[in-house]
Image 1 (tube, rainbow, N blue to C red):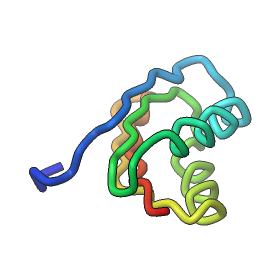
Image 2 (cartoon, rainbow, N blue to C red):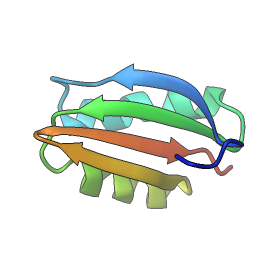
Image 3 (cartoon, rainbow, N blue to C red):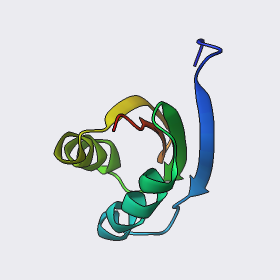
Length: 81
């Protein structure tokens, strides 16, 4: 993330959790963040990026950035509303 104005509000490690549990965890986390803040989390779910992308569209949030290193995805979601 090269833009210094972007703020990571929360970081979470969801390694070992299935996608269904991660999606349930995202709702309360996003709700307590301020608009424009970023949530960063890691997961080892193989299709996490696709699943989170769908979650973001459904909840009108932004999949800000995603990185895959080995079998670990690091995902950044920006709160939009």
